[in-house]
Length: 462
Image (cartoon, rainbow, N blue to C red; front, side):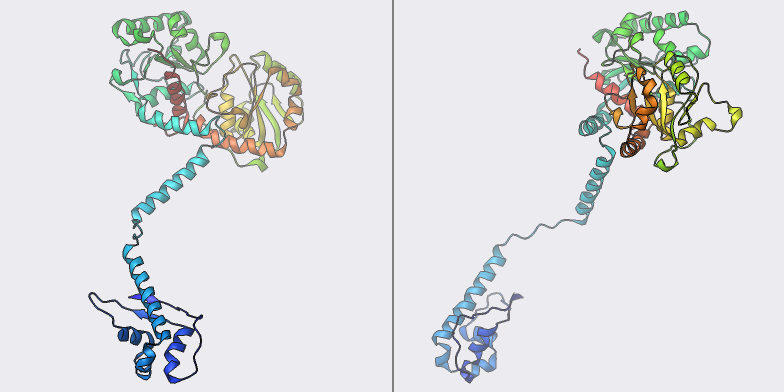
């Protein structure tokens, strides 16, 4: 059924109101015709006029009137219109049919892109680059774990998954649970040396003996396998969170100079090389209380710190601000006798949490502050912060030099409310990066460490 609607020939002159002119007058005002073209059917002039003007009007019109100039023009107009309609329908390309499944897939892809835009925000130095490289790492990165060493002594397995050195234990466990492990060394991008200095420390091993144990173990791997000699150990790495682990490698200079060291104490005075080594986050897990965040109205204390005075900067911090009414600075750790979880609850109530270095530049207090939603204030002259080449730390924390400790209160008060809100919101976004899980989950601390290792394997020259 082809529909031709409201075709007006208003330019034609009107005729007197006679019976023979009615069809033409009616056509001039408005023509609405439904035409069905049947296969192999020929339409005569009379048929077409009958379909257009009606049988009664056709009978009333005289033969001479049908072939008048007006009738001929009307006939040609209708015939032309029908021809164009037929040709347009015949040669018009039909619109492609989109299946419901494709529409659903397209909507899912749009939703994933929107989620990624939220997930990969400006807390990263290069959000788009990080997103692409992270996806590539998940697909391709492979690590071979040397099988040598008795798990009941210092090798293969972690000491425990609790305490302030839990990061080392979680990595040992996570690497075996992850997709990154391969049993084929020819497919490996990096080689993991699974020796745990934390386990040595737990068994009471002295520093001197640790150094000898590490040296003997690595030298055995070098003589037994061909992989070390291909790069002089540049594609090998080990993980240690306790600072004694860094000292234990000093007996093997090639391990310090060439291999990737993933450590919780990235101090330059112990030979940490930023472009080669990886700074592990020191995370005290399990956390005593749930994660904080999006609770700005509850944070009434300007700044908080409590701890031992085991470094010069901590001594100065306590001496200058211990009695201040706006900064909550305690000279020593808060005793459990004062109440249940008093220390953790102070993180919840504070806007900023001061994080000075202790015996080393690192501190588990940074991860505590992030977890509890308290903006960290880093007081250090040198600290290669965890994931520093990925995360833009200035978007979610305050970084100060040690000499700024004397102006600490005014510096914090000068931060506007709007800037504080931005810092707090970004802090909530990075919490997942400072959380260890077993088994590991996307974008958690384990995956961030693996991403750092993935970046460093590209610098290796075979």
